[in-house]
Image 1 (cartoon, rainbow over the protein chains, first blue to last red):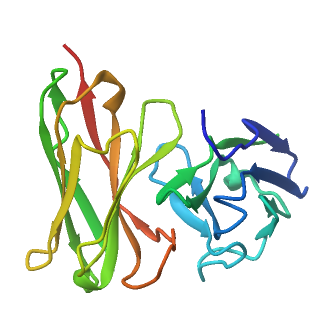
Image 2: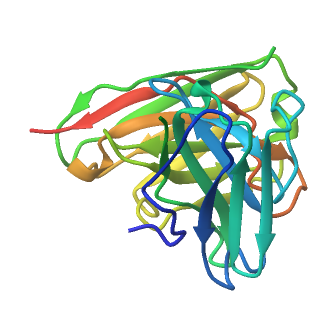
Length: 109
Length: 123
């Protein structure tokens, strides 16, 4: 059971906007940056969002991150079939460990 | 370009030991934190350990502290994970990944990942 809580699944149709939530506590999300990782089927994870809302240059601006208090969200606009993947949030915790959320499987209908 | 290649994953009996290696190239290895992250079959990601590039700072997940040891050889651009007292629940793909630059504070930016090596703990 992960300390960072994500919905196990999410879905949307092409072109739609979907959001994935990540809930934590004051010792992790509440006091540290949030990161998001995308894992396409059969591949290694890759960085999607860092420091709450920053995108690596290769990541399209359809992907955005936000944080408020002890929760964070990943938004994907203009949903595309290639966005079908598992998405994980992550954050440092005051216990000096890195926590991952349980992951959200995104299905493009 | 950055490349990370893991090796050493095998089938091992419960209670056994194993050493994973990761060969890094394409960047100044000593300038970065390095990390191990694992993924049990069909499950989510679990962070295992972090090591700084130069000052020896180490971090471990509670689930492996006291059993696993992370280390690195900056002269050989290599990262290691010594795994002792292995349990069935340690069965996973182990990813070697690049963390943030040294002295970044509590930054979990993991921007390059290897393809992983499978460790199976079973009798």
